[in-house]
Amino acid sequence: MSHTEKLLSIIIPVYNEQLTIGNIIDRVKVAAQKTGLRNEIIVVDDHSHDKSLMIANQHGVKLYTLKQHMGKGYALRAGFSKIRGDIIVTIDSDGSHLPEELSEVLAPVLEDKADLVIGSRYMNHKKVGARKLNAFGVRLFNLFIQLLTCVAITDSQSGYRAMTGAVLKSQKLKSSTYEIESEMLVKTAKKKFRVTEVPISFEQRTYGRSGVDPVIDGFKIFISIASAYVKG
Image 1 (tube, one colour):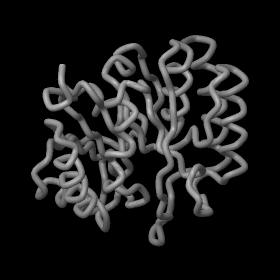
Image 2 (cartoon, one colour; image 1 turned 90 degrees about the horizontal axis):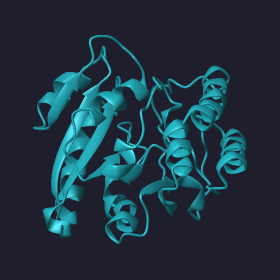
Image 3 (cartoon, rainbow, N blue to C red; image 1 turned 135 degrees about the horizontal axis):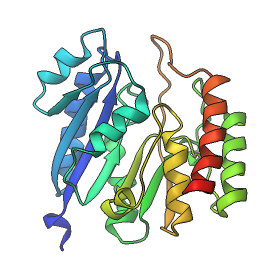
Image 4 (cartoon, helix red, strand yellow; image 1 turned 90 degrees about the vertical axis):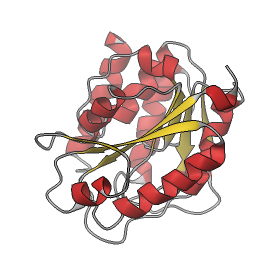
């Protein structure tokens, strides 16, 4: 199958991001068009109580809404169940990821050099101020994953990713919140798929507040890493 025949599915989970979701959708559309791939954009609204759902509905994408707030992991899993793509991309809706870097994130998959590509904040030349999970916490997760899987990565918690359909079909994801990135990475590595990273820019949100609790969600991530490795 040639590149132009492949279908790209882009999933954007959203929860109370009325200030950014419209802009992100528009920019994702432009970036997806530039790849030359057939594409579908799927927004999963995690029962937002602001205008996120209304705004997304005005931007001509496939839109699904959860009946109650379930968490990022659940929203992504809901999106995964609806996709038709040969290649899948996930990107956050708060504006921290640049849709304009979509081609760079996709490149290793399109060149058949990787099955899962993680956009790493920590491979860039710029310093990153991480409010969600600080750099020290991310390094601990990275080290734990490397000890278990022998896969060395710099940003195991990044939500900007590209993967083949085969990766997604190979695993039964269970996470409901932010630990889904770790679960997916460990299960992918354990099944011997090729994992690589590419540097991305990262723009820390300057409004609102993150939904991540460093202690509670950090503990969930450690448990998720261990469980994904042991249970597969």
